[in-house]
Image 1 (cartoon, rainbow, N blue to C red):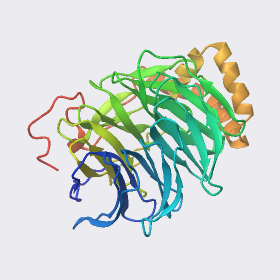
Image 2: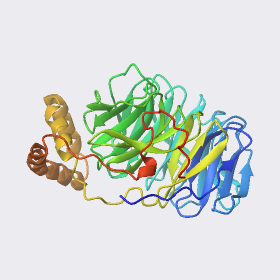
Image 3: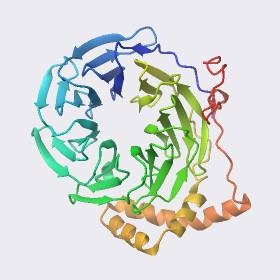
Length: 392
């Protein structure tokens, strides 16, 4: 992998804590939601950040912001139970759902190409909104505590919900059905889909990354230790690498299959990382924290193709072979209902298992570790070093 360049954008500073941020899909714009309810849109650049507009629509903390597919709308949701859509060009309110939930809205996600927005509240209710019709299209109760995060798989029409009650719920929007994992004795705070939708990774309050296999929802099949504090936010850098934001203030890079903490992108000192997001071109990572700043981390060159796309296939095959027969039957039934592409993908996995097992035997069961650029190979275990920023 090539050496990544140091961050070139100055911090974006605010007078109050930032709860959420979101990059515009095609322009150098970033939206933020603050603890006061203030929503802001800035144009960012290496020279300076320019405020485009602000909105004081919400009367309580703005916990989530998200652009629609083409970036013409900005969706916002708040602890005041409201959901709104703002015109990105002007900041004017296009539609406003007062009392969208009976409890504070804690999570929100635009569902790409679905024409829907998902919201989840502090009491565990999930709603799907059709913004064009300005109506609630679906409701999914079932969680006993707050909804922390969403992930969406478009070709499966499936929404994943991480709950503070320790459950991962799987919502099939095609059939309007819900499945849920067994309850963990830990809060699920973040969720991301990886490995071409074969695995789902959840971050927990105790600092564990719990890995579920698609279709095997009862319990996680693997876990990654090493975070000393809660994992509040996750993004996928590629199908085998994720980035985590933790309450210890560090933003880590984590490899999947083989599972390993690879390094640290940056930190917010000792302030908890509330949210991390990727820019539309995936060259920047934005992070916000209780230190009232949004930081920009340059990822350009961090994850270049190193010819290791199949490195973890044998380990994944081992997990698939160990699953209970009933879980395998449930997964097969679910896959039959998905698109033909998903069926083809399952067949390819089966053909590759034997070859991958042979490769792993040749390596004595120890696949080579992914190598990050030197500047990211620092205190992934959470131990701080005085020279951390010397080469940034």
